[in-house]
Image 1 (cartoon, helix red, strand yellow):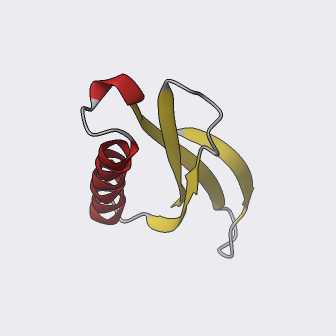
Image 2 (image 1 turned 60 degrees about the vertical axis):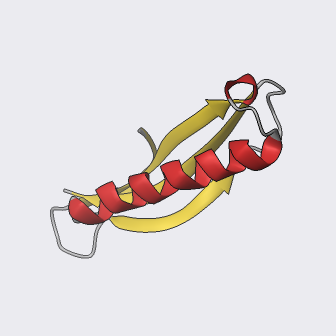
Length: 83
């Protein structure tokens, strides 16, 4: 989890941070090609979103890797943390 933006929150004295939660899978780790890779990624996304909800966080969006790495597919979930 990597903070990507911090700003003042509506309530005085509090701050809100947007964080990126990265996750991924190696292309060679699956036998069914890209379909299996993306199936695994979306299963990971479901678990990340469930953990965010359980912690009381706010899910914003899921960002794909745009094929930056040939051997590894990465996604990130953007979430908010208030503290």
